[in-house]
Amino acid sequence: MRRYPLTLVLALLFYLPTLLLAEEWPQFRGINAAGISTESTNLPVEFSVESKVLWSAEIGEGVGSPVISKGRLCVTTMVGKQKFAVLCLDAATGKEFWRREFDTGPLAPITSPNTPASSTPATDGENVYVYFSTLGLMAFNMADGELRWQHPIPQPFYLLGWGAAASPVIYKDMVLFNQDDDLSPFLLALDKKTGTERWKTPRPEMLAGYAVPVICTANGRDDIVVAGSGKLKGYDPQTGTQRWTCNTLLRTIMTTPAVKDDRIYISLQSYGDTDRVLKFALLQWKDTNQDGKLEKSEFHKAFWEKFDKGDRNKDGFLVDAEIDAAFQAPSNMAGGGNTIQAVRGGGEGDVTKTHVLFNLDNTSPSNIASPLVVGDQLFVVKKGGISASFDPVSGETQWVKKRVNNFGNYYASPIAGDGKIYVMGENGFLVVLEQGKEMKILAKNDMGDSCIATPSIADNRIFVRTLHKLYCFSEEAK
Image (tube, rainbow, N blue to C red; front, side, top):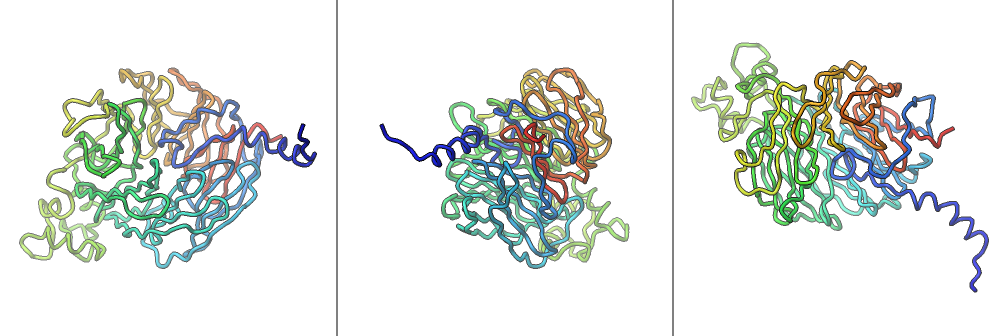
């Protein structure tokens, strides 16, 4: 019988808990952006910066979420005004394995609370894939931080100066990246090993938005599903060809859909009513002298070509229909409003009249925080801490317009695990609800700083990224 050295046996015993606990949270909101931990069964309820802190780390400023794979955590941050960093830490201890820093060069204007380090990485456990507006997409070896490849991405431009905040995701052997800006929106697929382009699909009807691509499996096939201005679209993963469109969405898309089985759920609120197209927002925010006209000097020069195209009478101003012609596609004059929708996946062509399962108006839809579909519950939260919950099959109301006991803005999306829903407010308070058809608040926990990033869950630990620090909370902490 073969004998093993005692040191090897002890090492295996030491690492066994890590090997057994290997839950993945590989991208924004975890697997398929669903926001659900299916493996953690002992998540903390009451915790704070002074209680149940397994570890914490000063990491710099940013609003991207941490991702976790094989016991390692990666996160992006700004460590100087024009210095971007990617960090890799031990998820169990916070020990830094490696960091890579890059000069960003001049940065475009950005609207608070967004920051330059806004993108959440994605990882397959071997590499970590990172986006930064002036650096493009980059792949790093998860083990040692070696730069594997770098793919340039056109810098996005936003009419209202929101700033970049798109995040990559992984589908099989590809990295997917959706950049819906106001200049030249597109959906991109790269080979995850080499960074070479597989395909690139223009999305010319879209305005600025931040939806992450999700995968919906229906009728025996996978579709890449992306929410954008006015339209929810499904694409062929192999070619990027559009398979279907559902033309029921609103003008501004800040949320990412949630997928359960063959159903796609989205919660939207876009300022104004259905007649409030982009023109009205531009007249409100870009018409600096409030003369009812837009002139070229009120726009970044990247938009001057579009401006000239819309200026039909060539008088140097955009007025009324000229504004629409310049910046919003005539085939997609989506307006404002609010809605919570369920759409059946797997369609072909225009499914607007055939695949909408329910469309709920005036029900407190979330405008920035993405919807959460967990168990028999479709949960949303919005500004003011106003929440609502519905049956995800029928759309029947479970509750509506109930506050989660925390006033303020909600930029982070709710997540769930271990029968609990975690709701992060910008003011730094994380509210814990009991998952279920009736609203029950379990705790309200102080994170001590502003929080924009969506928390992450893995291995019975909750990782909360405040504006400047990263915390790991766990029942392991004594």
